[in-house]
Length: 205
Image (cartoon, rainbow, N blue to C red):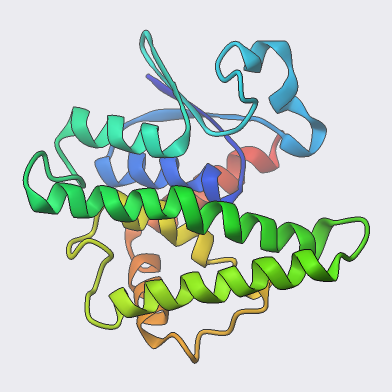
């Protein structure tokens, strides 16, 4: 059975959503990042970058959420076109999440909520970038139901990060396309099941 090492964070939810969409059986192994379990030698053998999530599928071990999503999509022939322009459009938006949405939203969230000392320059820098990124998402989603036209790994990767928009002081009145997309994805049974399964499993650890 597939083993998923994860924790209830935006990155942590992505792979569980994918597995639920594919209806694959898997075991959740909580990695309590608040206790530093991601830095234990046993976990470092799985991911030298000591980050969740990690997927173990038989003899295959993969870290980095984007790589995991591509692996599962290609192995199961779903949620990523195998060839043609739509494949590269999907990968474009997946890379946009990996390079922009995740890092910038994560830094904005950190400096707003967790930094021991308020750093106005850092807050302003990342808040400005978050607003820019929401503008990019809105420009796409005001005319498309999903990031790459059809529901795909690009949506799965991006959705958990957009869910924390309030942590970054972002209201969605200015972004009606993003808001509709956020609610549309939220209604998917696989998404609801994934969030509940990860939260329940990790609450017991």
